[in-house]
Length: 202
View 1 (cartoon, rainbow, N blue to C red):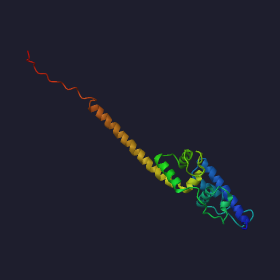
View 2 (cartoon, rainbow, N blue to C red):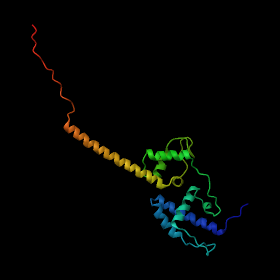
View 3 (cartoon, one colour):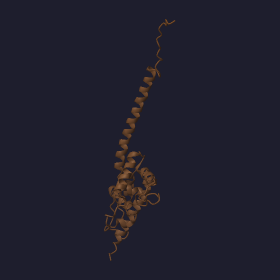
């Protein structure tokens, strides 16, 4: 039987869980992850453990964002922060499922990764965890963020804006060309006149 983790590890896991919950609440309210991470990390950094005041939590914003992703990916439970936790848990995603989601984003521009995942999960189909009889997918937004970082979504969105801008310019050129054509050319050609010759028949 495994020995239980030391008391300070248990308390560390509890503090990190509170920090992650604070960060999750901030992002759900629309706050930027990086900005919220700095604020939350500042609040908990240097906090002494009650069970061992000689130990203090060291929590940089980058560390908080990393453990936040681990926490959301693995069920949002304190146990993920124990130092002997095995991080190589099986992913909830398969490559075909992520490929479908990626194609969904490319084919249908979305305002955000969160909105894209919400829409994708609500679609009908029979693939992915939790999909039975058309029920929504189970993986959370934070899990998809781990699998497909927001930086990737931003790259796709940036190129989609370029395409949309080019399409708008083409439409404007077409309107200008149509106006020129309508001004300078008739809708129909004039009817051809049939030349008549004198009829000398008796």
